[in-house]
Length: 339
Image (cartoon, one colour):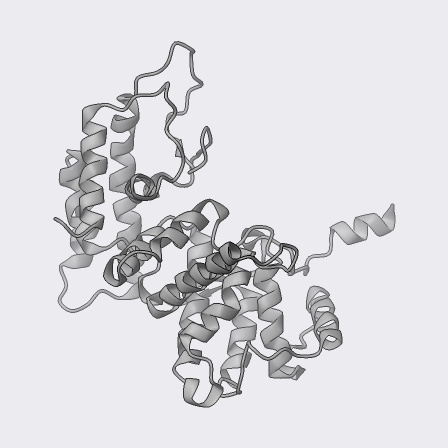
């Protein structure tokens, strides 16, 4: 029994632990990031010119020993070869309980890569707005690092496309070798890599609602922004480009505006004959019949993308009123660039 208790109370287990439960550190312009990811990226930054970084595998035996030491809280990263530390990063993403790119968004990310180039980038950025905050912060930080790696591709031979091929299986938790490789699965892997490629090249915009959507939100929802927009006004009054910190605050302010209007939309749903449980203050999580209080600020983007890619299914027993359909259609036209 004592041994079992010791195992359960080990505080430094990293691999296989969710992003929310990992030790964090705050990085300017990125937010809170898992400490292990920061430590490995700082170390690898010193070896960024290493040829085949992330592509070439280190020793399997050394990697296993390195993982065990990290889980025991041993400070050993700086003493390991770069290829082993690079392998450690891939294991970190691969062994997360849930992929850093949530499963419910996989199909949308894949479909978005089949659009024309400008629309592909725009839609991928919109999808990134649906990521949980920890996932968005983690990706923003790590993809900025990968972008720096790609800028040294003349030496390390790892441009953003090559890096995307390496990390797509780790971000999507796909291609583990258990499934037979067919033309269909190969095509799927290629589209996943294309999605990661787009995210690397557009890492600055991850989680940022595009300006054109921000401008349209109050009018679309038919709400009086009032005091909710004061923070937006304060942020945007200054001259020059917005800093990362300002963008993060603006994103939260927009979430407040949207959240305040969602209750109006949900009140307009026509229920079926069967009484439904009270879900006020909660919104659809992207899975039929599921609700989550954490995604309400992202629902305006979710509605647009759900309409575009069929994320989730609308039950036949629920009808949406004309206002909702008009709003969804309006957002779709924005995402298509026709407004």
